[in-house]
Image (spheres, rainbow, N blue to C red):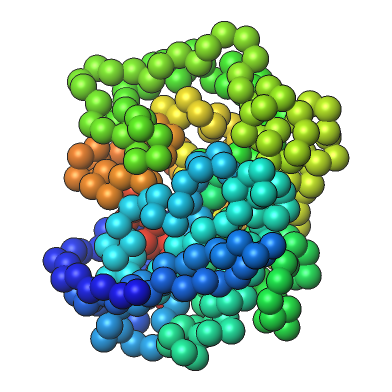
Length: 359
């Protein structure tokens, strides 16, 4: 399958771990070809990948692999923004993948699919003009969790089927509002509730897989319900992911946590989380950032005023809701800094991150 679309040009804005944009990715490209392929068939179930290729861009192309959200039980490879605009037209090959969903996608089956897709891209790099040494992951919510574990786990772990000779690390990871440590999510949600309700809501997060609509002036996030949240429930998304109630299965919870795999030498991370998120507490992203920084890795955390869960699913988010105030914590080569900035667009921050580390 293939299709083409013409897109307008758009200037770049600063943001990300480094400030200098790569000159090799400065141009924009109007013709984007799309091809849908089967990258694996675990258990006989085909898993699809949409590959967006900018025509006229310098080859080989750096690759961004997008992992959709949906509580590990919903969503598809089309659950996300316009991949032609973000970021195929900037000279990246965009690969949006499906992975096994629960109950078939009990951890680590879905993670194996992610690593299998990365190896498929390396195996077919010559055919599509891809650079097998410049692959980054971008995941949202459940996809952010999988991107983090895939980026941090060792070569040979959770590889799944396919050509294992091409297993290896990715070059960078963007985790957007992904869960990190399931068994403390309810406690964090309760602790964050007072400040959550003071957030000026930029979007309403309904329906959850589309990314919300513009919120009326003065709107605030809904208060989380009192008492235990769905995270601790026996049939919560997290419990279904690990195959048992999370509070009764600490070993499974630890095995599914990105924190378990943090060590020196991890790829650069950009972690983004809206402070109006009432689905995944932003304390989860803080935990991941602090673990990465403590281990001496390059990492950046951006906590964004007014944005709810699923904000990256909205293609015209920045036109509707920006600019944003962001609290930024950054560690680069062991040097840490913390600041607050006003930024025009969340997609521009993501774009600059990938240009820096894949350009």
